[in-house]
Image: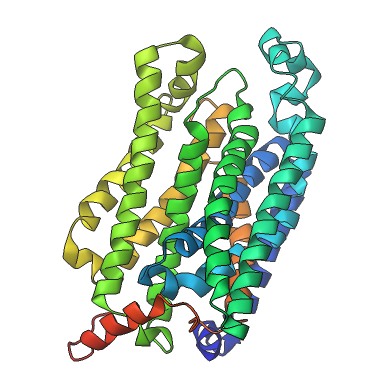
Length: 399
């Protein structure tokens, strides 16, 4: 806990409070702009919310993956993942303003849109009451998963009862299945239905994996910063960073596979109701962002992460993760904004809202991270990381 306090101490001020205050101010500014530019505000707020929600949900997914599969990589990241997942109740509240913007965001929620024969055919699914009910269900399920996984983890720490390992493993297995379904449908509801004439069976999975990728990059970036001091310095090793880099590379390749598969299938089918989505995003300046995403979210990270030395040095791996986190926001913006604006433009409110929501989220994340010890001695996978650190103790460390 002292490490967290030291980490967020800057120039004699508590950076956690400064971050929270700065984020809250920027959010209030974006809310004020909503009275003058309501359409721009709701689009911007959706971009910001999808980005930061992906961070919290990604922490939950990776946390359940660790409990299911084990491994030293997850043992050292456990507290970071739990802290990120525990921000979900706050994000549930932060996302409430979006409900007011449903008629503004979604054409199917407006009277003129409901007259469209294509939308009428989907009216059983695309209607406001059912849409709101599904969204409430998603957040109830996600928060329940966070509560259960953290409760069992805390009980394991307090009692040392190994039976909780089985509960966490089974919970991770069942939770990942539930997570996959709910996140997929949430992406369909809040992003794909912005253009109700378009559909893709891969879109939900692509959005989910993209969020997990950015989240894992953020978690690695946080770990490399915290590993400068105890207790994480006792488990840091080049071998551990190498494993984290390998898993990050796997997520990069998985996202690229899904993104390319969607594009290839739609290009091969060449159907009007499918290609329109890409026509919007590959013309009128939006193609610049498409190329940027392809380079910075796949090509460059892939080229760097296949190099062993990059993965074994914290500052190089941290640079890759920072690129991925920033590019994720660009991707979310590219996925959402062309549905409203056919020509590339920068929605300044989106930047303000993202920074504001980010300040609040990071402060909440730091607060949750400081509540418990950064290492969980009850996690049996921690011993492997400690052994790697001991083996490399004599060698000079570069971090």
